Image (cartoon, rainbow, N blue to C red):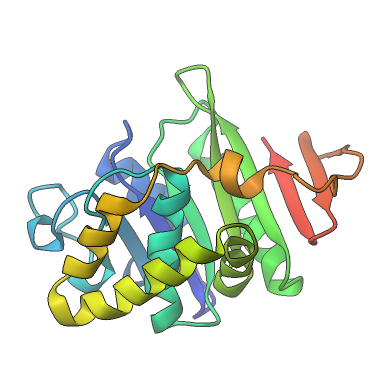
Length: 221
């Protein structure tokens, strides 16, 4: 499968999906060398966690769980330093009720949408086997970081500094900051339509699509 050189996937590890399931999902949008994994452990332990196929540079360690908003922000700040033009799919390691083929098609469609509409953020909500829903995001790194800077500016600036410093102190600055940060939820603190920008939904190809004035495209499987 051919991918653009700026297409990336970020796996948010720690969910019920196996490493193999998560890597298969990521392969729908990005090659292995541009697949990153967020783990609550040291990257040096990647082999024990079943991620030995991932390049060590693509392993991102979070010191502890601080909610889904930080789970997404931390890898974005790492990725921005490597590829400022990156288009990224954020993939929680959930076990989905929809087929891998259908989810893969939706993710590829979202990547195509972001490639042609650089300011859009695509949210895909897929049903899980636990009768819930999981949010997957597809966007350019700079568009997502722009949203974070509007909603959580102080957190972005503090974590950006810590990531920069962490390259010199083996991640100690990030670990210290995580001790001070509150838990933050992606949907509640970042994606909630606080300003009344949601437009009327319409149905396309079996998916509910909601446009935001940001602009952003929300899709629900």
